[in-house]
Image (cartoon, rainbow, N blue to C red; front, side):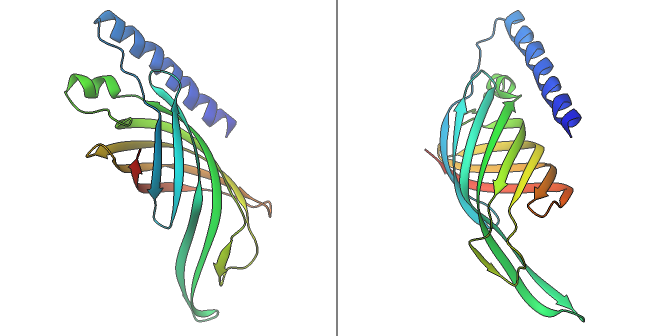
Length: 189
């Protein structure tokens, strides 16, 4: 896993060096990311994110909120029942926005960091605060490198899509790897 993260960060760094040289060669204005506050909702849950712009194409965001899941089980052995749980979470996420200059050249908006990005999210999911038909009090740590895109409509309304891999570890020493897909709707301040 360390090799995957190292490789991803090296690719992002080399891409940034090449992009800076290309922009300077054409004498274009440097486009920078913006710091933002966002309140959002996901599939199940809601949260607050502060995204801090610390370089031309880089941000780091911190998030907190409530996440959860719901499901229905139908089994001849266990029976039929609904299950759900709600967990508080915190996460930190560096992002590299790689197409801001291209969007500006095409006359498209980059307000609120509208564009495509690569990111690595680290999250800690606390034990559930509310659960039904869920056994155990599981807390977990997850690392998820992914690709995403963000759009801001009417200066404030956020749409974000992300896809990647998630590596998870819980307090029972279980670990897993899976695909992560997400859609986030929110309001940007």
